[in-house]
Image 1 (tube, rainbow, N blue to C red):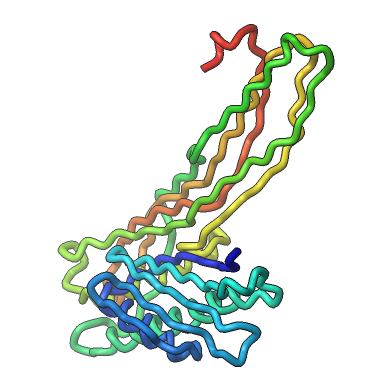
Image 2 (tube, rainbow, N blue to C red; image 1 turned 30 degrees about the horizontal axis):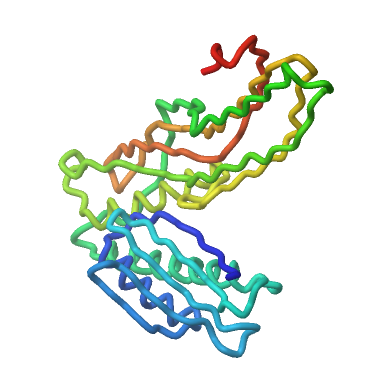
Length: 269
């Protein structure tokens, strides 16, 4: 049995910059670097041996900007009593976020390339709805039973919060690419605070339900997993220019349980 914890987050910096800062975050977090493969975006490290146990840290950087971090205890440690695995992942992402923010600030500091300041003016054309993530059906056939039937069933689902923003360089009046990337980072952080969810965070929901069917009935229970979708545009004042950034956010995880009586299995779909 192995104790482990992993989390994925989305960043909007350049892939090479993210990979470089992922390497630096290993050292800033106090880990020891063991392996780095720039072609695949794979990094391996170990946590300090003076802790409760020495964990193995694996990091994978995707070309889309997502970073997956996993902390795993050795096989002889069955239970992470002191939550060191979540701590390792949390500390690493905290340091990585700080390094990427520092890199973004440095990249936009050239006076000849960018305006001096920017401000998010408003959010408009906002649309919100709920999308279905998955549907699960549990048929309970008690047509030939001698008593009412009740059982417990565990439903679980995992989804990842995602925020995407679109920039059209040709329509931004010559604003530098590095500054546009910084705008995306700031706008994504602003939207994360609005919706109350972290971009790239994995959400898992578990639900134990008591399902029952009376003697002689055939009932189909249906659980529908849903998450919220929020889309719109930000108007941002950059110097004396107005920049429009369309955004799209998928977040949260909810469920709805219903029961429907059927006459026969043939009518069930």
